[in-house]
Image 1 (cartoon, rainbow, N blue to C red):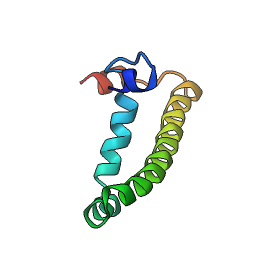
Image 2 (image 1 turned 90 degrees about the vertical axis):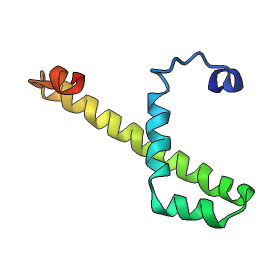
Image 3 (image 1 turned 60 degrees about the vertical axis):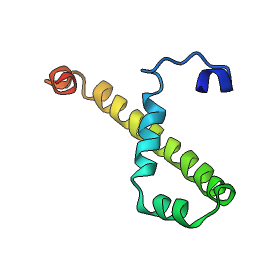
Length: 84
């Protein structure tokens, strides 16, 4: 759906970033409350801002994680920890 709507060619693996953003938003009590008490149109306004903020937060976290690996050199055990 994203590819056809936005003209991208992302794979399921590429979408992990946005899936994480969506999961984090869905678990936030304030977002859950906003969804419960607002009309769809009003919630859309709240959601757009929250989604944008969460994208920036997730991007920063991803950058921090990558820089940690690059700055610290090899992080012993990382492939094993991530893979299983």
